[in-house]
Image (cartoon, rainbow, N blue to C red; front, top):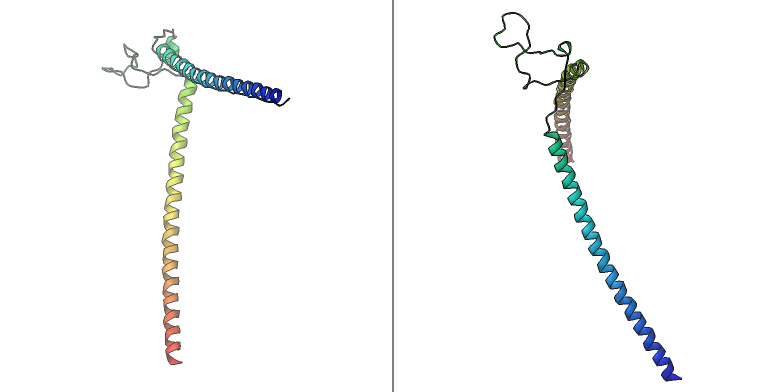
Length: 155
Protein backbone atom coordinates (compact mmCIF):
# COMPACT_ATOMS: atom_id res chain seq x y z
CA UNK A 1 0.00 0.00 0.00
CA UNK A 2 2.83 2.39 0.86
CA UNK A 3 4.65 1.59 -2.37
CA UNK A 4 1.47 2.34 -4.30
CA UNK A 5 1.20 5.70 -2.55
CA UNK A 6 4.85 6.52 -3.27
CA UNK A 7 4.36 5.52 -6.92
CA UNK A 8 1.26 7.71 -7.07
CA UNK A 9 3.19 10.59 -5.44
CA UNK A 10 6.03 10.20 -7.93
CA UNK A 11 3.55 10.22 -10.80
CA UNK A 12 1.95 13.38 -9.42
CA UNK A 13 5.39 15.00 -9.01
CA UNK A 14 6.28 14.04 -12.59
CA UNK A 15 3.01 15.54 -13.78
CA UNK A 16 3.72 18.73 -11.75
CA UNK A 17 7.25 18.92 -13.21
CA UNK A 18 5.81 18.44 -16.71
CA UNK A 19 3.27 21.23 -16.09
CA UNK A 20 6.03 23.52 -14.75
CA UNK A 21 8.13 22.89 -17.86
CA UNK A 22 5.12 23.52 -20.09
CA UNK A 23 4.36 26.72 -18.16
CA UNK A 24 7.98 27.93 -18.53
CA UNK A 25 7.91 27.17 -22.26
CA UNK A 26 4.64 29.07 -22.66
CA UNK A 27 6.00 32.08 -20.73
CA UNK A 28 9.09 32.16 -22.93
CA UNK A 29 6.90 31.88 -26.03
CA UNK A 30 4.72 34.76 -24.77
CA UNK A 31 7.80 36.97 -24.19
CA UNK A 32 9.09 36.16 -27.67
CA UNK A 33 5.70 36.98 -29.22
CA UNK A 34 5.48 40.26 -27.28
CA UNK A 35 8.97 41.19 -28.46
CA UNK A 36 8.08 40.39 -32.06
CA UNK A 37 4.87 42.41 -31.78
CA UNK A 38 6.76 45.46 -30.51
CA UNK A 39 9.25 45.14 -33.36
CA UNK A 40 6.38 44.81 -35.86
CA UNK A 41 4.61 47.87 -34.40
CA UNK A 42 7.85 49.85 -34.68
CA UNK A 43 8.32 48.75 -38.28
CA UNK A 44 4.71 49.69 -39.11
CA UNK A 45 5.16 53.13 -37.54
CA UNK A 46 8.41 53.67 -39.46
CA UNK A 47 6.72 52.57 -42.68
CA UNK A 48 3.80 54.98 -42.09
CA UNK A 49 6.24 57.82 -41.38
CA UNK A 50 8.22 57.10 -44.55
CA UNK A 51 5.00 56.83 -46.56
CA UNK A 52 3.76 60.20 -45.24
CA UNK A 53 7.15 61.81 -45.94
CA UNK A 54 7.08 60.54 -49.53
CA UNK A 55 3.48 61.67 -49.98
CA UNK A 56 4.44 65.13 -48.76
CA UNK A 57 7.09 65.30 -51.50
CA UNK A 58 4.63 64.56 -54.31
CA UNK A 59 4.06 67.75 -56.28
CA UNK A 60 0.41 68.73 -56.53
CA UNK A 61 -0.92 70.83 -59.37
CA UNK A 62 -4.22 72.63 -59.10
CA UNK A 63 -5.84 75.34 -61.15
CA UNK A 64 -6.77 78.75 -59.79
CA UNK A 65 -8.79 81.43 -61.48
CA UNK A 66 -7.05 84.76 -61.87
CA UNK A 67 -9.65 86.32 -59.57
CA UNK A 68 -8.57 83.91 -56.84
CA UNK A 69 -4.92 85.02 -56.96
CA UNK A 70 -3.69 88.07 -55.10
CA UNK A 71 -0.04 88.91 -54.56
CA UNK A 72 0.48 91.08 -51.50
CA UNK A 73 4.06 92.09 -52.31
CA UNK A 74 5.08 94.62 -54.92
CA UNK A 75 6.15 93.09 -58.21
CA UNK A 76 9.75 93.62 -59.25
CA UNK A 77 10.18 96.34 -61.82
CA UNK A 78 6.57 97.40 -61.43
CA UNK A 79 5.74 100.61 -63.19
CA UNK A 80 2.90 101.54 -60.88
CA UNK A 81 0.62 98.86 -62.29
CA UNK A 82 -0.35 95.93 -60.13
CA UNK A 83 0.77 92.74 -61.81
CA UNK A 84 1.29 89.19 -60.71
CA UNK A 85 4.89 88.04 -60.64
CA UNK A 86 5.87 85.70 -63.46
CA UNK A 87 6.58 82.84 -61.02
CA UNK A 88 4.44 81.95 -58.00
CA UNK A 89 6.73 79.14 -56.83
CA UNK A 90 8.04 81.09 -53.84
CA UNK A 91 4.64 82.32 -52.71
CA UNK A 92 2.23 80.92 -50.17
CA UNK A 93 -1.34 80.20 -51.21
CA UNK A 94 -4.23 80.44 -48.75
CA UNK A 95 -7.77 81.73 -48.65
CA UNK A 96 -8.88 85.28 -47.88
CA UNK A 97 -10.53 83.90 -44.76
CA UNK A 98 -7.14 82.47 -43.71
CA UNK A 99 -5.51 85.84 -44.37
CA UNK A 100 -8.16 87.60 -42.27
CA UNK A 101 -7.65 85.09 -39.44
CA UNK A 102 -3.89 85.67 -39.54
CA UNK A 103 -4.32 89.43 -39.47
CA UNK A 104 -6.78 89.25 -36.56
CA UNK A 105 -4.42 86.89 -34.70
CA UNK A 106 -1.56 89.36 -35.18
CA UNK A 107 -3.73 92.15 -33.80
CA UNK A 108 -4.76 89.93 -30.90
CA UNK A 109 -1.13 89.07 -30.14
CA UNK A 110 -0.18 92.77 -30.14
CA UNK A 111 -3.00 93.44 -27.69
CA UNK A 112 -1.90 90.54 -25.48
CA UNK A 113 1.70 91.83 -25.50
CA UNK A 114 0.51 95.26 -24.39
CA UNK A 115 -1.55 93.69 -21.60
CA UNK A 116 1.37 91.58 -20.43
CA UNK A 117 3.70 94.60 -20.45
CA UNK A 118 1.17 96.63 -18.48
CA UNK A 119 0.76 93.78 -15.99
CA UNK A 120 4.53 93.46 -15.66
CA UNK A 121 4.89 97.18 -15.09
CA UNK A 122 2.19 97.06 -12.40
CA UNK A 123 3.89 94.08 -10.74
CA UNK A 124 7.20 95.93 -10.68
CA UNK A 125 5.48 98.96 -9.14
CA UNK A 126 3.79 96.76 -6.52
CA UNK A 127 7.14 95.08 -5.81
CA UNK A 128 8.82 98.43 -5.19
CA UNK A 129 5.98 99.51 -2.87
CA UNK A 130 6.11 96.22 -0.95
CA UNK A 131 9.89 96.45 -0.67
CA UNK A 132 9.62 99.98 0.68
CA UNK A 133 6.92 98.83 3.17
CA UNK A 134 9.16 95.95 4.23
CA UNK A 135 12.10 98.27 4.81
CA UNK A 136 9.90 100.62 6.86
CA UNK A 137 8.63 97.65 8.92
CA UNK A 138 12.20 96.40 9.46
CA UNK A 139 13.30 99.88 10.57
CA UNK A 140 10.34 100.04 12.97
CA UNK A 141 11.30 96.61 14.38
CA UNK A 142 14.88 97.75 14.83
CA UNK A 143 13.67 100.90 16.62
CA UNK A 144 11.47 98.81 18.90
CA UNK A 145 14.36 96.43 19.64
CA UNK A 146 16.62 99.36 20.48
CA UNK A 147 13.93 100.79 22.72
CA UNK A 148 13.54 97.36 24.35
CA UNK A 149 17.29 97.18 24.92
CA UNK A 150 17.25 100.65 26.52
CA UNK A 151 14.39 99.63 28.81
CA UNK A 152 16.22 96.44 29.76
CA UNK A 153 19.36 98.43 30.54
CA UNK A 154 17.42 100.81 32.77
CA UNK A 155 15.98 97.93 34.78
